[in-house]
Length: 378
Image (cartoon, rainbow, N blue to C red; front, top):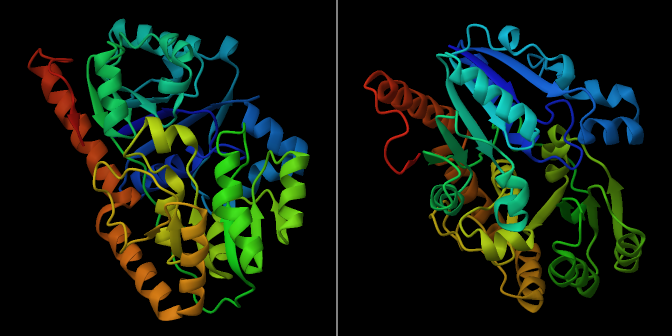
C-alpha cells in the first residue's frame, strides 16, 4: 500500500513531540513493505527554531536513527496535490497542518480520490483552543485518529467528524530500548519542555523541590525554559542540558536511575486516559518511572507495577528516596513496565491497528456506508 503523510515536521522534534510517534509508525510501515511518502512545510516553526538554535545541520541529524525517512518540504502555494497524492491508498493529515491544507486535501478526495483519508490528532487543543480546531473542515475525511478515547468522543459529540477511532501513541522500540553497560552519571533525569506555563507549578512541586530536598544528582533536558525556570533549576542543583534530540533520549535514560512524568495540566485534568508519548518511551527504555497523578481511564498500564504514582510533592520525595535506596524495587518496576510496552504499546501494535481501521473503512465504502456509525476504539 502507498501511504502519504502530511505532518508539521519529521526532521525536527524541537518542542514537537508529535514527530516521535510518527517516525516510529512510518519506519514500521516501510519495514512491512509499504511505500511511504512524507510531506512537511519547508518553514514550519519546529524546524525553523531547531535550525536557528543549532544550525541547519541539525535538520539532518534525525537520519542517523531514521535513514529511510526523507520528507518532501513543500510550500503550500506551489504544492501540487494531484502529484503528491497520485496512487495513494491511505492519506494521513496531522492536526498541526494548516486549515487550508486540510480543506484542500478534503476537496481533492471529494473530486474522486479513492484513498482512505484520515485526520490525526495528538494534542490538547480540542479542549484548550476550540476555535483553532473548529477551523478544520473534515467533511471530506473518512475519519479521525484521536490519541485517546475522551478525544474520540469529543470529535463525535461536537460533530467535527463522521467517524473517529482511538489510536494511542506508542514507543518506537527500534530506537527506544534499554541501553546496557552505560556508566551511571546521576540519580534522576527529566526530559521535557517548560513551554507555556502549562505545568510550572507541578514541575516545582514534583521535580525541582524533591530533587533539592534530597540533594540528588539530576539533569533536565528540553527547550523553552525562561530565566526564572533556569534559576530554579540552578538553585536546586539541577544541571540543565538544553535541547536533546529525541533519538538520543534512550542513551540519556541509561545514564540515570530514575525519571518522572509530569503531564501538562490539560492531560491531567481535561483529557483523562491520555498519557502522551513520554511514559511510553521511558518504560520502553527500562528506566524506573514515577508519575504525578493522571487518570489511566483506558487501562493502558498498571499503576504501582509499571510505574509508581506520587499524589503530591511529599510523596514524590519519599518514593524517589525509596527507589534510589532500593535498587531491586526500582528494577522490578522498570522490568514490569518494559514488559507492558512489549506486549501492548509498540509502534508495531499501532500499525496493526491502523491497518485494521483502513480495511474497515475500505469495506464500508465499498458497501456504500462510509461514515456510518459512531466510530470505534482501535
